[in-house]
Length: 309
Length: 143
Image (cartoon, rainbow over all chains, first blue to last red; front, side):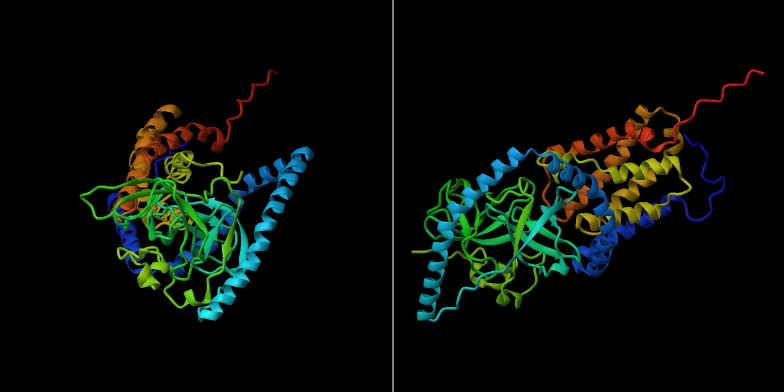
């Protein structure tokens, strides 16, 4: 190993002074970015600059994947193909009924003067990475501004809602999962229509409903879907299932823990829905504020609860 | 699979950036400087989309420690060096964790603390990967 000494007489400030300088600079960066969000343009420029390196770093796994697919046996592919065909057939029935139901619903809405439901457009995206730190629950997908992805767009997988696009770079976007600490979304219990706000728990990959009164009719095993309040998330997307309900008489609210249905670990592709035009009028999503759906709609805001009689 | 580090492995994912920073600081101190550590930290933050400056703070500290203890570390063999480098890596991890806690981010699972030992293990592979192998000395020609 090289044992040259740097310099016999080093010029300039002492190493400790330099350390203090860089630490102060880093702390200044943290404060400016966290409190004032003045570094977003810089961050965007950096993300473009490191894009080729990230692509290069992803190359080996991409290559391995391509090789694995190339040598996959035709029998296995045939079996998968058959399975998918059967699934398609099973779902075709439901989809055709859905079309009829939707047109009926829109006719009824027109009768009572409600706003028409608009079908969201989608874009398929591939998951290309996860955040390196465990403090944030984020994934990175391979479509960005160039593909028309908008910040705030809901993202779902086959099983259900995954999260929301929170940053859009020219070539890729960042999706904050519903389990992230700063993420909130309006949900509804399928069984009885009880509405609530769901907040991510952060590290443990679960989320909770902190503002449900203890007297509410809610129990473990209940399925949760998006309620559509706030106008950002379309109503009826599967969100998760209630894992446990703890009722403590010392608190006005029950402790409710839930697990999301749309786990991202097993999937490669996700669906990015478009942001409805009326949701664009509100604030763009901001990680420090709860979800925009909560910010734009006072009725969805915790702790005030909407409860069906 | 595109995501080889899933579930608990995600927490153990080694921070190779800080490892390489420490390695090159010890091996080529003329090339490295506090600004390199700071810049790498900023890059790590933008790649992670975490608050800018968190990693820069941790990496700056690791760099300072590595530069300060360089002569001492050079006097050890690779395995012993790994043990001495572990605290430097841990300081970076501890700093990022503390700042994240101050920013009210949740503390990850306890497995997270095994990240720095796991990263230090990779130190053992670095000489083989990054150092030019010494060629055997020329055998003296017998005339």
